[in-house]
Length: 64
Ligand SMILES: [Zn+2]
Image (cartoon, rainbow, N blue to C red; front, side, top):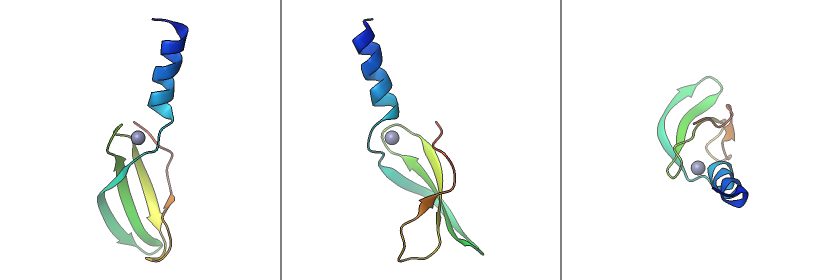
């Protein structure tokens, strides 16, 4: 494997536009907690949506 191939696989691994799917969600006193997973790479994240009209923001770092 060449260096550039290694570089490419790392790029594909870590940097792409995640396509988040909501696996489950539940309401808390702070808002709606969304458990999302990327459809393409399987990385999971937890988002908090304070209000239905506001975009959710991540509570956790992405992890595989
Ligand atoms: Zn992804």
